[in-house]
Amino acid sequence: MATPRIYRETFDNGPGGWFGFAGNHLGLKPLEIDRSCAISRSPWWIDYNHAPPGAGYLHLLYMLHTRGAPGEQLREVAGVNRFITGGFGTRFTDATIRLRLKGELDLQGARLCFLAQGVHEGLCSGWLLTGQTFEVTPEFSEQTVVCRPDPAQWTCLGTRTDRADYYGTRPLEKVLGDANVDILLVLFPLTIAPMGPLAGDPHQLRPERDYPVWRRRLPEGYVCLDEISIEFP
Image (cartoon, rainbow, N blue to C red; front, side, top):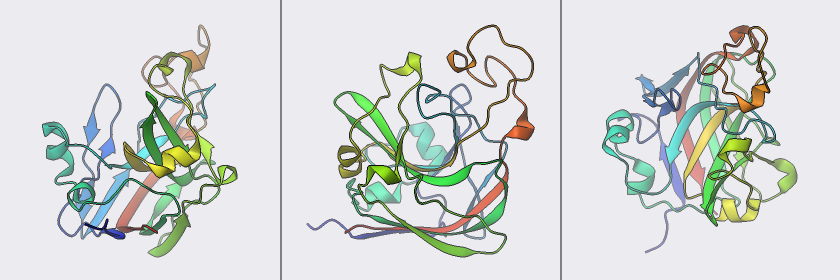
């Protein structure tokens, strides 16, 4: 049976497997579904798993698993994953990602980026499409990026020092060829400003868990995602 070529989620019947994330210690976060839009609102968790020497910190707005059977908690939060049940593959090389979205964001220097992750040779490797990003405007617009395997278009997330047993760097071609963990829409990069002095290296600590930060230096706002489609070559 041939792999379907175009995945399309319109959120007419719930989140379709998409979800947000409220942090390692808080767990999964359901997206708000309103008038066939999946809405993500600040404040967003600071993902610190890729702190320097990794690529840095990011906000996870939208997440979708690309393989595997969801656990009970994820099913309750995200519903049926129509990407997996639809039989779509995990080869994202040269795939075209199209969004219809609107919103209001105070970006504070961040951009809305596509992220693909896959586990290869025992490590989870994530690559951010920083060379092509999405613009969030007050009115709906349709925007497209293409997942070309050109490392100049991408930023590898790498890992913070104490997560090197799980995260790491694998070749872009390998991850795009089999993004077998998840795909995401994220805000990157983030400016992490500790609120007060710290005893030690802030990148060895976890912002908002080990120390407070100035939230005014982080992105704020909301995004309404009306549709996402992925055309596989």
